[in-house]
Amino acid sequence: MIEVWNVTLPELTGDEPRRAYVYLPEEARDGRRRFPVLYMFDGHNVFFDEDATYGKSWGLGEYLDAHRVPLIVAAVECNHHPDNGRISEYAPYHLTEPCFGSVIGRGDKTMDWLVNAFKPEIDRRFPTKSDRKHTFIAGSSMGGLMSLYALCRYGDVFSRAAALSPALEFGPAQLEALLGGASFRRDTVLYMDMGERELGWRGTARHFRRVCELLLEKRVHLTARIVPGGKHCEASWEKQIPFFLPTLLYGLED
Image 1 (cartoon, rainbow, N blue to C red):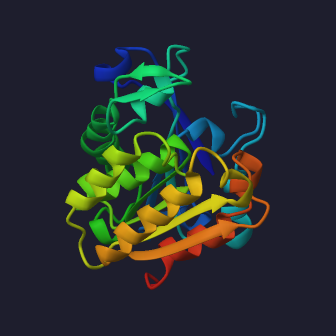
Image 2: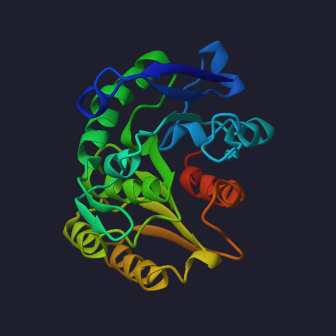
Image 3: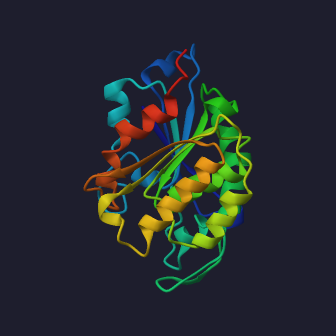
């Protein structure tokens, strides 16, 4: 079952509504069990093709139903404003890029809302396991970059994350400084991948290797993959669900 309703992010887009999506496993309906929660960026691309930016979603709900995964997924739609609204909300730091120009990073405001407004609402309304051990975050592209940021700055809230095709080429020096200055708890888990067909973009292979080195130096439990034939699109990320979900859930069985 997927519930959909409108939320607002006052510090980012005032009273402009955007959609929130929550997937509940069948077993959640009787209220007798509680479940881990995966928070996701780009919520409009996660469940329904008709809502997805390019007409193709991850189809995550169908996968979770088919495999009876004991997980709640809470996802929020991104900012669709044409003036780099999504990039700004999902940028942990200010960027100056040839393709976008100067972008003011407001990822800190996005995460502050998610942690201090959205998460408490999810914990109040649904049968969650609200502790850090059972709270995860995931995203792709800029959402993948934000998932790395969340582990760095909100490691007291999220114990595990998945970053699919993260936008490592945006501000690599800032990202290296962010990771280098982070203090990760010893049980921190990260799944990170990159599509084979993405590796030629603006030094992506070099950035991916460097980020992996920094994470391993910090003793993060890292699963890093190069996806054979992988592309930068929802159809490719959907195929990685059987890889990243077991990483997030490993060892948490009741």
